[in-house]
Length: 339
Image (tube, rainbow, N blue to C red):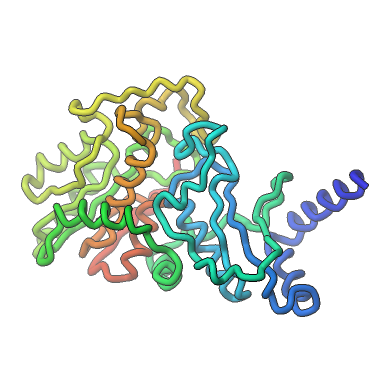
């Protein structure tokens, strides 16, 4: 019996690899009337077998909801399935960290009498999905996901209050704001699948073009390195604004990173850089990991409120475009290839 079960699992894996990730959904569509009563017994349990950031999860959840909505299958997000060093305190203290920041996409009422869970990962790492195009989408295609964001993704009450408070301190009603964003961690880690970030020279040139053309009175900077903010302040003075938070290279905050057992993604080319990355830093605050994520969420939601956008591609900036919903007067995501 055990041998037969393993054989079926291996066969299923092979079929999905050969026929593509939508194979299993094709079968479900064929059988749904006879087996699943028009899907009324099904729900989808989102899991991620990767130590990815909060907005990487955000994008993938939206991408999958787009498909699930056509089948009328609700989704439950479960991020305690796999140890993610960015959010879990230890391998023994896993929790569903999505709930720390966001509400579940579907209310509990959607799950009444639904007993059959479809999981995108099993213990045998059986994936039901291919690598999504949303991570490579341009601005026009990203905006198409805005309707799903508005319908299914909401900050929980506590985080929403914190985010709005941070943003209201720096952006006022009549401000005309240019958002500028780069991920310094990408530049340091140089992961093969991460997008190349624009350099200071290129950004200064594009910022000046926009300042000559539009009555911009503030420039919001979203970056994980304080040195970059100081360099922009040197050129654009009092126009520069940012959310106050600990950042790398800021002498006011001491990074206490000491975790020698930290697991870095295999795609990162340079080792021993953990203490230089904001994601892995420790500024000695209670609930450090949660605070850093809340601050990052605040920055991305602030970026979404801007009138103009100049940004290196990252999961956060892609999410900002979706949250903004096509309201930027001008927007540019630098497409410079990958490291």
